[in-house]
Length: 224
Image (spheres, rainbow, N blue to C red):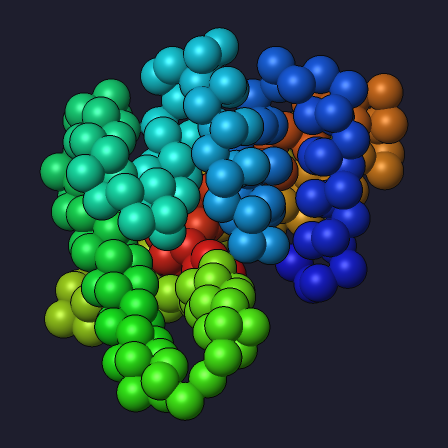
């Protein structure tokens, strides 16, 4: 998915959510807000959404990472265990526990470095300069980028033979691609269906969000 298509999809998701804030698309909206650095707003959206969808694992995991970015490691790990218990996956539990560890480690590292720099120079600055340093630190913490690198020692997942039939956009074709874990092809089919069947665009956009979430889980989510 190129940048334009991704932004277009995100705008459609946002519009649907704004029209109906009880939509399950709240998780994707919150994820996009986290990417823009507004952690507190994302947490609020996720907590409200989970009142209507308490067993929505993707939303729970995104909320866990949001808490980690805000420095609340304890709640982050509690949420990871809750989400992993719902889908009963030790692999997912380990993945997100490692993710939380990385976020907290990076966050603490940035805080420590900036604290040392601030201490060494604070005596030579007036109050207004100190406030400027704190503001810069806050912005850098908000914009800190965490990259998840998959374990290079993990064996690759066996490939599933791809669908080789005639390419005609349909829900059946999209489901075939999904059964083969061919998520990008499935995304393209649903994008064609959005144009082909605008009356069902909301349903297809929801499918796009769900598939994108699967891609995020498999490749590692990069939050900004």
